[in-house]
Image (cartoon, rainbow, N blue to C red; front, top):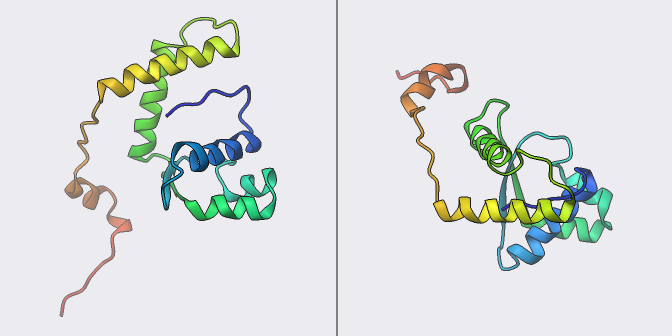
Length: 140
């Protein structure tokens, strides 16, 4: 899902979250978001944009998970954004409406292609590379 805005502010993020809850997934009990650690990706942005009751209503429906700085999910998102930049945004686009149409057309093609990610970092690799994150269990 892609949305094009003129800016990238806390208010824009908050409005996007309301659209996610009210328009795109109104029947969902909980919406799980995988986000980077960008400073606006917080519940505080919702409280800044909306009255407390409205912010709380949205917060209750959203479950945020933040990617590690070098996390694989973030890499996948960045690959998609790189593809968008190379395949769609590699030229001057005269206005916001044209940009929205171009991004929507690109998104439709990408979704129809149903691309997959070839994960090559195995659990065994993780246990070696991320050893410090795994608990040590001593058997007696």
